[in-house]
Length: 182
Image 1 (spheres, rainbow, N blue to C red):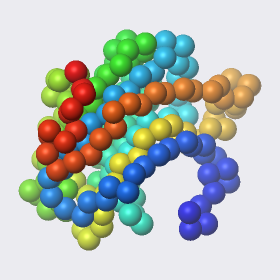
Image 2: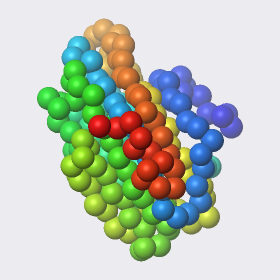
Image 3: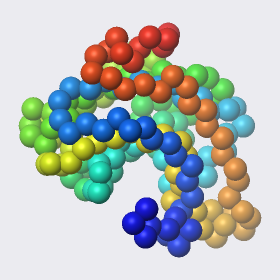
């Protein structure tokens, strides 16, 4: 993509994204995520499990495994301005978890980003949710950066990680995305 090379940047990834691009306004997103019980945390390698990105600009909201569990980081300003745990390691391993996001994409203070994990509101952010003049999109999968750290620390290759996603949806209304979520 434009000369980017994950291997030369000490990264690995397998991500998917659709053609659903949004420049502004309210949108809903939903997905289910499952980490097997034998999922190996490779922290301090940065393991991303989804992201809201901007076309030709930086990531704005990042979902990570971090030191365990499921975390979100706010990158709207171009750096991490807030990070929060959404689900603990115990809540994640061996269980399906349903995520629901309601966002008003805006570069102004009228933006908001609300996130529910298993029907519990875990994030209620108000303020700019993206940069001016760009479209946003959702990517999901596994994206690992600084992978050489693992080998330096553990003296062995980084293990394979498996994550399952299901019912990944985006739409203008809540009813568009929650059809089969429990």
